[in-house]
Amino acid sequence: MRGVKISELQTPALLVDSADFEHNLSTMAAALPGARLRPHVKAHKCTALAARQELAGHPGFTCATVREVEGMAAAGLGEDLLLANEVLEMSRLGHVCANHRARVTVAVDSEAVVDAALAGGVREVLIDVNVGLPRCGVDPADAGRLADYARSKGLTVRGVMGYEGHVVGLESRPTREEMTEQCKALLLKAHGDVGGELISAGGTGTYDINTWATEIQAGSYALMDTAYDKLGLPFRQALSVLASVISVSPGWAVADCGLKALGMDHGNPTVVDGTTFFCSDEHITFIPDEDHAVRVGDRIRVIPAHVDPTVAYHQHLWLTDGDDVLEPWPVDLRGW
Ligand SMILES: Cc1ncc(COP(=O)(O)O)c(C=O)c1O
Image (cartoon, rainbow, N blue to C red; front, side, top):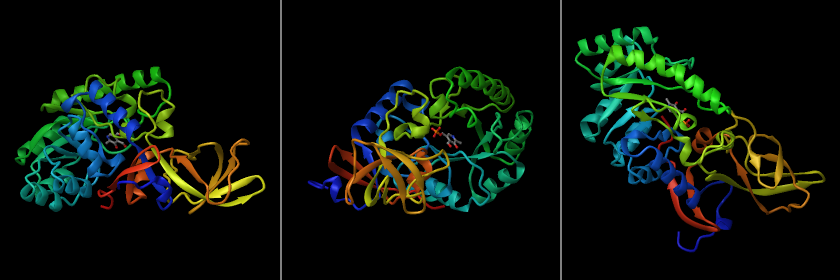
């Protein structure tokens, strides 16, 4: 990419500021070195980025889909992959274990999912415990029973996981602390019944609050978004969408990134030097700041409210340094 400028990129384009990104990786690696962090790849779906996280010292990764596990193993990043999600068809995972010499552990919260692991050829599991997020996870009181069932079938139970997803995004730190403490009681009780070396939990919003898990599954910290920015964490907004102004009317302007280029489940994106009016499929209508009038053809920056679904819409992340494009990083873990 020598000599390529961001002005030459086709828009919408997803940019990663290299200085902010490196700051995020080094800040997290200092707080949670080595295996204390198991970075979640769902936030970026990109093996080139994951390779940087491995270089920062983290040997294991968290995944959310079979495709993410496959892609990470194929990229040589399969030393210790946790699929922190329930899946029912695991033959592709069994294939990964056999052919890529990757270590794959899956989350299980029912006998049916344990049976699916067995049928698919996966041999290591974590008992997924519900610590308050109404999603997956076995009742803490049932965790020991499920672990016994898995062991009776010949599987290795490496421990427990309990994702406090209902807590990670809360803006008040005292509330995050108090609620993480409630999760701790549930997960440590379950771990007492299950055993194993792993207690896997946490996310970007609790990375320094959850001090009792053996590993934290944070993902958003590497790129960040405006929802997490409100929490006052030491991570910088490294991700932005570059868009082109395609139409200007009295009172508003329109650029070429809409809700098919931006995850909107955490609310509207933020326009730099403007105010978001609304997004439609391919358009963002915004009101430019008084001192930042725009013309057709101008480029603007738009900051996503939620990093994970935003990245999943794009084929590339473009690593940048100021106006220079350093590298294209394929978003190669997309799909299922
Ligand atoms: C199971 C699980 N663990 C960890 C995370 C961490 O996410 P983040 O760092 O984005 O808060 C997520 C995010 O959705 C998740 O689903």
